[in-house]
Length: 166
Picture 1 (cartoon, rainbow, N blue to C red):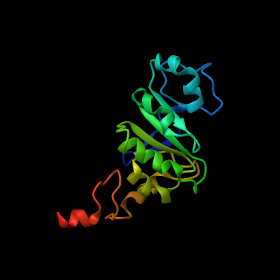
Picture 2: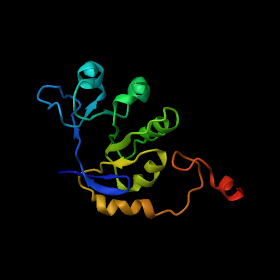
Picture 3: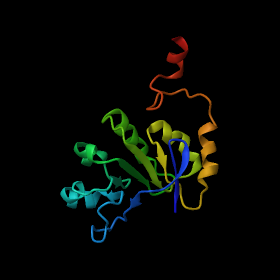
Picture 4: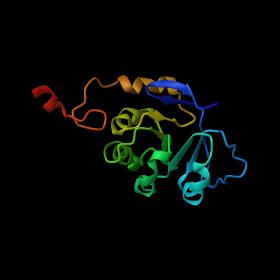
């Protein structure tokens, strides 16, 4: 069983991430699932009628605007990082929190490494499925490496100079 980091703790994964080419055949009605965007587009009506929890995952070339009107149906939005160097979904997480006011779980999946965690948390992520060869317990240390931040972001809306002058 995979373990993920959620809200600063390592927990056992309970959600099933469906593959990009998945279909609804054989998916139990009561399981918590995270479906690829294409499956949501094709079967939104059936997915809304399920008893289990529902999440959606977007690849790095898919835009959050495609599901902006449907955010209330998802408990989890997972954003795929296909490569460590592909940071496009950092902006997506920020938009989810700031522009759309999404309060559910925003999870980083794919090629997610410890070096990214502090910055991703600042953008709005609250859950992280690290790459399979990485230790989530060790990765927790990433959140303690900096005691102060200068820039404003989703986790600290005021930049340091404004906080100091207050």
